[in-house]
Image (tube, rainbow, N blue to C red):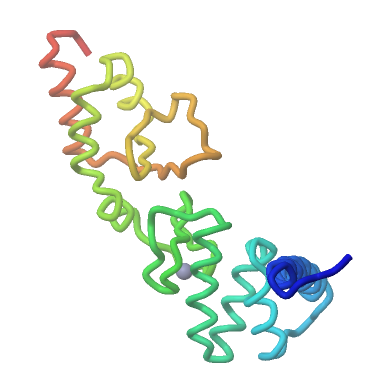
Length: 197
Ligand SMILES: [Zn+2]
C-alpha cells in the first residue's frame, strides 16, 4: 500500500488521538491505584492524580482537598472543584469555607466538614418565597401533614412534604424546620379554605 503525503496526515492525527485516548485511560488507572495504595501523597503525586484522575477522584475528594490545601496548591483546588461539579454530587449550596458546591442535606460539607446553619440553607435556596408558593398550592391534607411533622424538604427548585415519595438520587432535598410564624401561615391558609383544622 502506498501512503501518499495527503493520506498520511489524517491517519497520523487519528493515531495520535487514539494514543492520547489510551494514555488518558492508563493515567486514570494509575491514579486509581495510587489512591488505593499510597499512605502519604507527595506534591508531585498530588498534581498527577488531580490532573488525570477525573471521576476516579470523587470518592477521595476530601483527602485530595486536604493535601492541596496543605501544599498551598490553589490551582489544584480550583480544578478539584471543577471535577466535583462535573462528576460528584454537586450541591445547590456552596460551602462558605472551601467554596465547593458540597453542602449536603445534613448541613455538613462533604469536602471539608464545615457545618452550616439552617438559616444559611434557607437563604441560599430562597426558602421564604418557595414556602409562600408551596402553601398556596399544597392540598389541605398535605398542609395538615406538614403541621404534624413540623418540617418540609426543600430543593433548589421546589418544596415537598416529607411524606411524599421523592427521587433523592436526582436532586438533593434539605429538611427545613418550620418557625412559629410559618406554622401560623399554614394554619391561616387552611382556615382561608374554610375547612376545619
Ligand atoms: Zn467545605
